[in-house]
Amino acid sequence: MSGATDGAPDATTGYLVSDLVSMALRQIGVGAMGTTASGPDTADGIMHLNMMLAQWQRKRWLVPNLVDEACMSTGSSVYYIGPGADIDVAVRPAQVVSAYARLLNGAPAQTDGDFARSDFSSSDFSTPTSGLDGSGYPIDYSLAPIPSYEDYAALSLKALKTWPNYFHYNPAFPMGEFRPWPIPQEGVWELHVLYAQPLPAGLTADMPINLPPEYWDAIMWSLAARLAPSYGQEASPTVLSAAKSALDTIRSANQQVPILGMPAILTPIGNPFYWPGLEMQKL
Image (cartoon, rainbow, N blue to C red; front, top):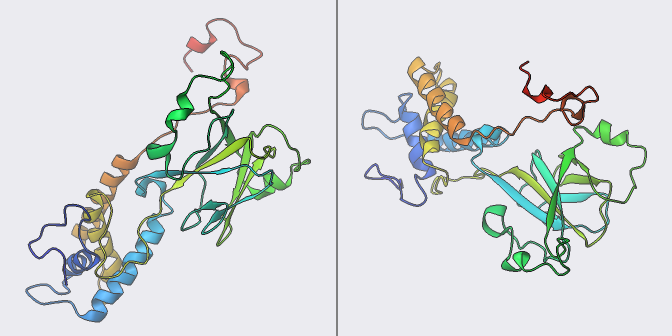
């Protein structure tokens, strides 16, 4: 049964899957004019919805949140990410968008949860244990990505154990493989990975669409465009235009553009041909 009999979504969880699938079908004339979509029509719509969200998961601008997960260094060269793994998450991420290593300096390890809720405990901000040298405070060091396994394989001394500077992530299935390099010392470092928060998966008719409100419209129109060929139709210009507009709204809401990084040779400090005022030149 639909959870929005009066047209209004639940204040906390939004619309049910059956609500949005029914509305999407009505946009292409299935279940319109006072009729009701059949059970097989609704089942097909739910299947398409799950497949569509699985595709959206791989597009950064369609994911509303990044998650920061961490694990303690064990001296291993590889840390697995997935259900029950070293970094225990329900679904292994397809990509680690960023990573850093935290030198604990005697500070306690992070508690479970993302960085917005529990990145630090109050004890992390206690008085340093030895003067002004910063000991007792955790210090984060960004890890630069090694973009491909071929590049990682080209490293001559993979077993080097010292201060970590790089990482490679291999999105193996069902467990992703996170490789920091050089290999960090056991028990001294906390390794953090940032990845796209999983979108809802395995949805059934009576489950809520637990996403921000701007997703409701995008799901309805995009699902209508996706379902149209199943009924011998081409998605109408109205449906396609509404879907594009709704997706553009999500893009503008989720867009986060990192600061542009430049090779050291192109920066004033790293450039051997630097002269005073170089940083003020217009290119």
